[in-house]
Every structure is written in C-alpha cells, then in structure tokens.
Image (cartoon, rainbow, N blue to C red; front, side):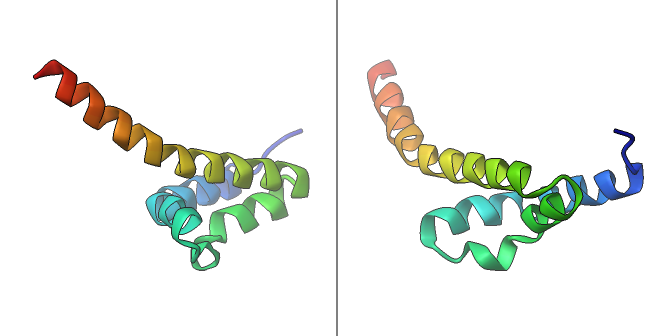
Length: 79
C-alpha cells in the first residue's frame, strides 16, 4: 500500500507531541484529552492497528511503575 507521506508525518509529529502526556494519562486516567495520535492512526490505518497501538501504549505506561522501583533497587545495590 502506498502511503501519503504528509499524513504519516502528521501522525508522527502528533505522537511526538502527546507521547508523555498519553503515557501519564494511561496511568492517571485522563488519557482521552491526548488521544489525537490514536485517532489519527485509526483514520489512516484502521481500528485494528489503532487498538494494538493503544494497547502497547497502555502496557508501556504501566511498566514504567515497576521500572522505577527496579531502578531504585539497582541504584541501591551499586552503592
């Protein structure tokens, strides 16, 4: 499938703009304000890929919590 480079660039720029807000919003619960990149992916690639992308963002955001505690353990062990 040939892609429209302008549209793909808009999606990437939107994700770069909302990335950390979307990750934080998945944990806190106010992610709908920052859902623009997911909606753009849905409109361009389809619902299946948007759902997979949203799941991966949700999964990565919840893995930040154990990663933080893991880093604290590693820092404590290095001392």
